[in-house]
Image (cartoon, rainbow, N blue to C red; front, side, top):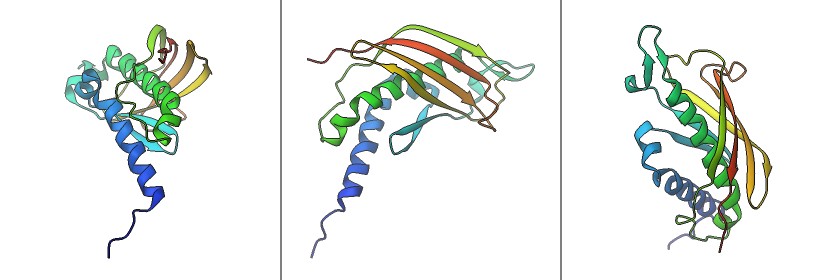
Length: 160
């Protein structure tokens, strides 16, 4: 006798697959090795350490461009995830939806990124049909001590 799958697990699997498709759809995200930990609707970006990410080998410190890219990727994926949540819940295919486009992205480098894994979490401060603002913080060992933060503004893709 086969058991019916637990509806909660079916929805969880659908969400995980949608997030994986979203991240895997961008080659640069794969190149950097960024992945996301999902807890409900909250995402944490994870940038696993790799020697290729070092910009200043004397310190050593993460490259500033890698730091900025990590924060921007976390912002864009968080925005996209928030806007597709209802569609994923309904079981719709969202793999072909477009990504938000960056208007501007300002990074504050607070301290050197050390040669270890980094984490980031974005908070949407304003989201409308055409425009969104996001604040994102990146940290390594202690979330209370971010090594970088950024504010970004994005044009949201129009549906239909």
